[in-house]
Length: 142
Image 1 (cartoon, one colour):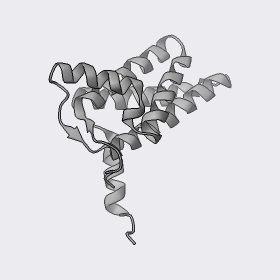
Image 2: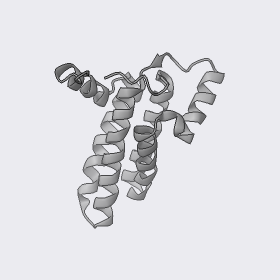
Image 3: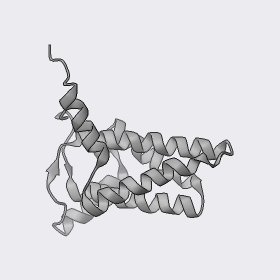
Image 4: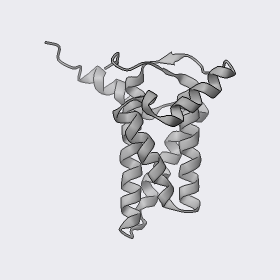
């Protein structure tokens, strides 16, 4: 379902956000899983309130539009869905680590893989799932 109630997002800005999420996930895997709190916060803000409520998104827009390389505008619905998944995966990783379980590495590794696909190849797996879901189960209109 396309979201017209939130402004569209720039494609290269979301790719930059994916690269930053990739770098934070790598750092969390190598140094401390508490870094995943950053991604949980960003995923929560961008996923539930919209990209334009996230401070990092504002920085990305300013930087990339100043270089005229922000890309094209995309509907924000699928990207918001992807950020909800980022929030869930990051929260699971932090919770598992806080409970002393080594299972925290599984969602972090999944985020590394999927954020790498997004920033390197512009392949958003969550966006694909989002589109497939709404093609298979379209919302009922009144």
